[in-house]
Length: 163
Image (tube, rainbow, N blue to C red; front, side, top):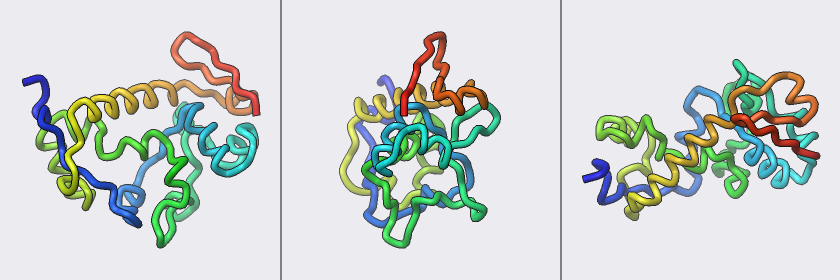
């Protein structure tokens, strides 16, 4: 057995549910997330970054209003669901939730859709884990200058984003 979840895990993102969005914390963003969100907002990457992205301990994160709740959460659910960041797209298949059965139990307590619905195959869960790892790596190491200039350092490669 490769993983304890080799047979997959049941999960359904429930329409209108925002339980995962209401947890305290940051929404980490990489350049692909920022570009996708800008497209959804119908504005340039540069404008999106200046209005909605900030640095927190060297990480690019979505600015949160004073309430601490994501600005895209409404009574009907996530209003940018199609454009949501990788961190949101991959929930609850984060390492802290799926690498152990205990972690999955924590996810089930946080999320009404975890443990119900169709089974997500182990291969797809592994892809989510990979996407989370890449995004967490890419969102680190930003500087104020990078934010202003649109230059994102990801690993040893420098990526220039135009907006």
